[in-house]
Image (cartoon, rainbow, N blue to C red; front, side, top):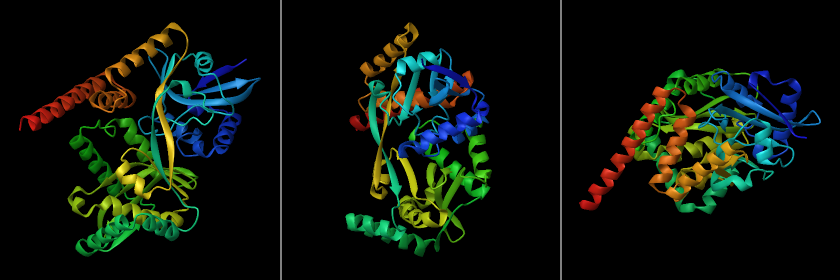
Length: 382
């Protein structure tokens, strides 16, 4: 019979920790920095509502789900929206309704599901691609293969590289970069970008800031923050900040100096960052989903990630499924304004922990939608 224990990540036993790591190591899709006990514990240091459910059969751990337990026994991915990948890490296919019921949950809302056992395939509503750079040889060979596949594109990238170096200063990658000033510049540029584009500022809450700064300060062990930056002379051009586990790196923040936008520094940065991977001991540089035009040209692999809602068969679970279906009927799967609004509301629900914070964020979300509609109407009228 399936049984479940739910606890704060800091209370994981050594045996459960070892079992979780073994499950992650058994599948490359689960082996990244976001799906194991290290990330859960890191989030647990800044979020008291962090939880890990451990499912057991005959006292042996057979599955793990790191999550935040919200009102109504509603589970959201731990660390979201920073957890671009999440899922039920299990050694076998568990029945989702039975597993959630055993954990005392009514539903689990996922937006970046990795599901190698197919346990939640019936709950998936949509899927998208994430983009990954994987070195199976030298960085030079990898870049040469990219150039051979898209000669015109990479000839232009090389031209931009030379132009940036000529106009601004000699280019160099600093990695790992431990500069607090550089970190704060990346964060400030990203927040400005979110404001310009109407995205929710997930970097404003105290817990996300504390989490990233604590990871940046780590210098020991396989799991730590990593910042990779491009400089032109002494000037910071831009970079990536995220989390690494051994040879795998997953950036959360990609931001560039907006004053240098004419040089397309993002493309210049990625070529240089790939060259720096061997010196950092990196084999896998996981760019995550979204921004396909920027990421796809540099990626050698893609990973399918999924969005949906898994529920129990209890009345509360059925009610949550009906609410999800209402969003779908309204157009939340059609790629338009309703889908964008739903995604933003999901981010707000995961990142804002106080009622005033949620109220302010909701007001900003609806104001952003209104501005977009007004801009579109003006363009049509013009």
